[in-house]
Length: 254
Ligand SMILES: C[S@@+](CC[C@H](N)C(=O)[O-])C[C@H]1O[C@@H](n2cnc3c(N)ncnc32)[C@H](O)[C@@H]1O
Ligand SMILES: [Mg+2]
View: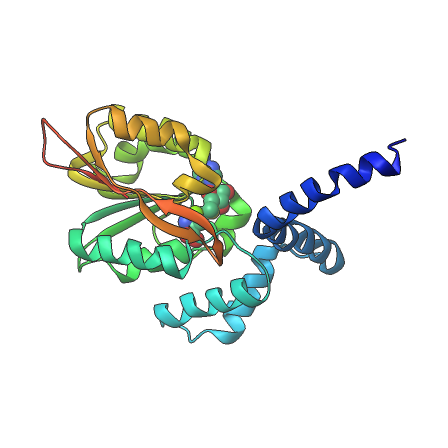
């Protein structure tokens, strides 16, 4: 048993920790505890609940309104790990600047990023999106949706799906897979000259090995855009842009 005197001695330390990390505790509460409880009470998944809300409230065929409706749900009801409106603006800006014709998204989830990318593409562009979890794929917007783990899909993108190479890649799947999949894209020569690679959440939850590789391998110009975690302005996050240096045209990683 901890004596009351020892507990009291640690109290200021514990209070300081709680105050310092309160935003992460709120995130844990909203993104894990509340969702777990609602899953059990309703017998549905958070993605199904979000999708039902979007179907009921969004104007069909209006991508901006669909995204706004997702945002409303995420701010006021339950947290979803969509890229969200703040980092979404960075994605839109980079997309507008680059006007890529072949776009690859890793991690479709509910289709938020897919809608965001699709509505910013120039005419004639193709968007491929890879989702490993069939439950998520079932509720995603249908834009060249490829169901399967990225490490199995990427090596066959050319022969099975006709993607010669991509000039824009949006990485937003599991962060520990970023580096492996960048190396896979490189080794299968699936990055076009001057390709832009946009990687979400490089600061939170974080992708340190990917960041280190992108910054030090000598192939990319990298610049982290500081932002906040989707739907949590108090938690810092970043989206990484960079571009390949010699011997080809610059490629961007964002
Ligand atoms: C953060 S969510 C994607 C959010 C989405 N880009 C958006 O903005 O709405 C991550 C998704 O990546 C999927 N995923 C994780 N690792 C994967 C892999 N190796 N291959 C394919 N999908 C993967 C998960 O099932 C999940 O649906
Ligand atoms: Mg993300």
